[in-house]
Length: 186
Ligand SMILES: Nc1nc2c(ncn2[C@@H]2O[C@H](COP(=O)(O)O)[C@@H](O)[C@H]2O)c(=O)[nH]1
Ligand SMILES: [Mg+2]
Image (cartoon, rainbow, N blue to C red; front, top):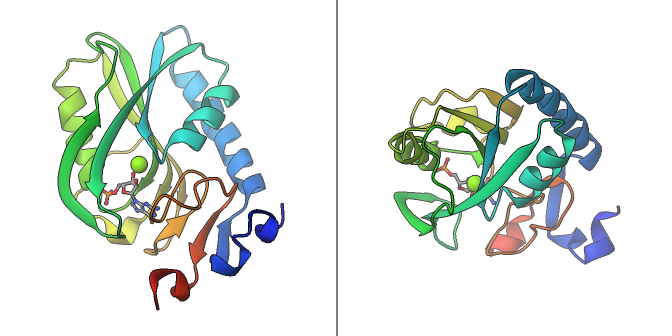
């Protein structure tokens, strides 16, 4: 797909990770996750809204039968900095006690959201609790988190696409990229 197919071309600065690279990485991660959960019931917990694309594509790449549930939490306003204050906007529909739970995330930036989520879901006594994230920014970490499956480590830049937004736009770009300064008013 050309970047201007969705009239977003002039807003983009660069493409960091192509759709093909994402597809290849998700297939690799899915093979590892399949091996880990062979013979077990696995519940995927997607974190709305950013993880919608990775959840959908990872679930389809898995051979393991899974159930899926969603949580919505908020630590960002309309801007690009984590507030550090996490609020539940939508809780799980599932009781996860005794279940094997895999949190599916789009990106780990400061790690504050995921750290809070791990503690919140951990207190519900799942049989196991692990994390798979498509992206991680190692240089932005404010807390150390044990993340079992990581797609790509990326530089400490604000990225959009493949589920990730800026002010709710750009989520439907099939790749991950950075925005031109004029988008932020620069
Ligand atoms: N569109 C983007 N959203 C981002 C980016 N970095 C983080 N985020 C959003 O925040 C949470 C996690 O943030 P954290 O600081 O608590 O780790 C993540 O799930 C996204 O929704 C980004 O570069 N672009
Ligand atoms: Mg997220």
